Image (cartoon, rainbow, N blue to C red; front, side, top):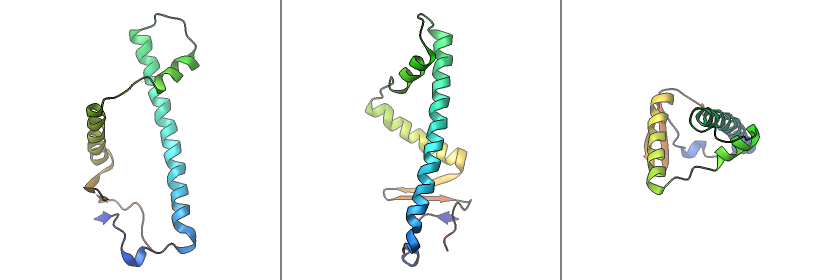
Length: 114
């Protein structure tokens, strides 16, 4: 089993490797978020077409309105977070060992430590 606990012997930042790894992480996160937002916009337009369609509107205005329209209560937000943990486990086979501090484990190695 692979775990993200950092051992002391691996806690050195050799030649800025952490910064390089974070750049890669943020690049992939940005690409993923862009894809998810595009999916959410398309889903919103499908729902608008199916249930609303009462006004003429441009596509850009419609999808831009989808981004900030939904506000969640604290209880709903906690439920979303709990659902994300279930998705993390079922879709990616990643288990949460501890939430604070965050310790994740997986049968699949994502990054090998040198």
